[in-house]
Image 1 (cartoon, rainbow, N blue to C red):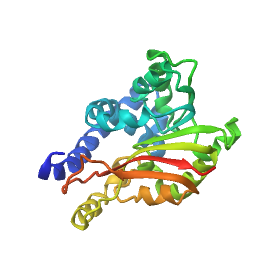
Image 2 (cartoon, one colour):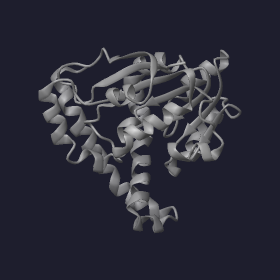
Image 3 (cartoon, rainbow, N blue to C red):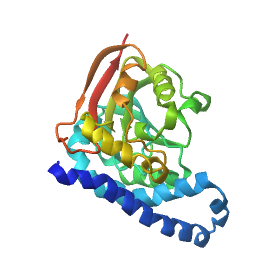
Image 4 (cartoon, rainbow, N blue to C red):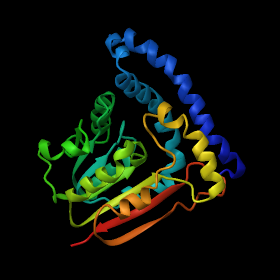
Length: 258
């Protein structure tokens, strides 16, 4: 995208994320959440919320030309996995207006994003369609979402952050798709070039700690291909990625076998 300057993007993001931590540590007691400071998990959740408050909207213009055509293919009953604050709800609302989507479950386990999701759903007229669900994928059936009932699964910048359970999580999600259902994908993945993988390994020493379990070295394409039996797989490198891209992407969709 930016040539050799792409090398600087990941460390710059790391630096900016670290700068966000003091704000998080200050704002928690100020807002009556001093008790959260005793929990590393709660601090990390709040920290990521404060990072996403500027990085999510700020990075959207960079990714929108690739993400918008992907999410515009959503149809029927959908699961939007890890939407954070819901920066793609505007695009989804356009699909809803055209009659392509009937229901969306926004599955977001971070409690700090629930109010944002509800507010953005209302902002784009999705109150009756978009249902925020504070849960992990493994809990969806307990909440009344039946396996084999979903037409579309969407994962945009989320499978990098599911820890060491990505294989099982993707297999679990696969079972929620109807036969013929589709999985829409835009995810950053391990670099395709050996030299860049070395750079990613160096960055990954601190990256998951600072960025809420996000991993640079995840081979998400292989994980998705092995999640179940597919009738069609159309996954490809994002065309904007260059030799120096420390955050290369895979994009496309998979269709579940009948």
